[in-house]
Length: 372
Image (cartoon, rainbow, N blue to C red):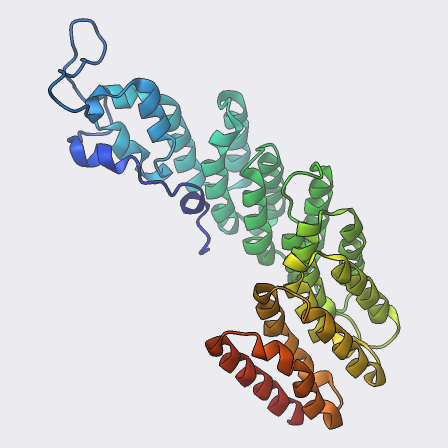
């Protein structure tokens, strides 16, 4: 898998100063160091600057918290004081190594149980759980589902970074399961998302994105899609602004016949128009690209109305909306394509010259595609 949660969550190079200024010894044993008679770090003379060796243990521990997990062993070998200051971090490093070598559900369960008994700070579980995410596909096929649930539930108990692990599992691991298992794990993740407090970050957008791993057109897909649409009313507007464009895109997973799609479109349209202008661009643009769900006689009217709303957006949101607006060209009646370009002209004139040229090319490309 390409996703590396450790790199994403540990990107501070503060420890490099220590690595560059201090010689490294073997990591298997505490390295020797000279200590003053008092047993504490020597106070630097007034005529020389403070060096790494003069730092208090508390500060070394804080630096160690930013060390990428794969470099903990090397950093611990800087000197004896660093070795002891990194005691907790070295324990996390050992669990990370075990997670990177997990080959069965039993090894996953053993590691998670051991961490629950020894790691006091929930944040210390982030690196090992990130490694387990990347090992799921190495487990026997029939054990992956239960391992997914255990890792996902363990991430739920991490207040800050646990949701990032859950997002990674949904976007990078769910696809490795059979269709039937995907529905079961989707429902498991949905139930866990319902337990998060409204003010907490959540995985609703990632759940919507993972709909592509379900069978398009199936009753299971439709049921879970509609559950996410119904969830919109309870979400913060910032979450709605992220979720609506994904839901608009996945309308392609429905059969075009019947009134269900038009009903869903109406709900998404209502929520889109209630969004603040400052975050409305992507939702408005994707809604315009989905006018194919409407009867052909209604599409131009809808497209024009959405265009009028788009012109009221700030320039940045207008640019975002235009990226998707052009995809609605192919759904307009052919006799109205020239008029469609005309009604977008005021929006194009508000863009910077370079952006304007690219947008015009996009519009022309979509016009040509509509004739093919």
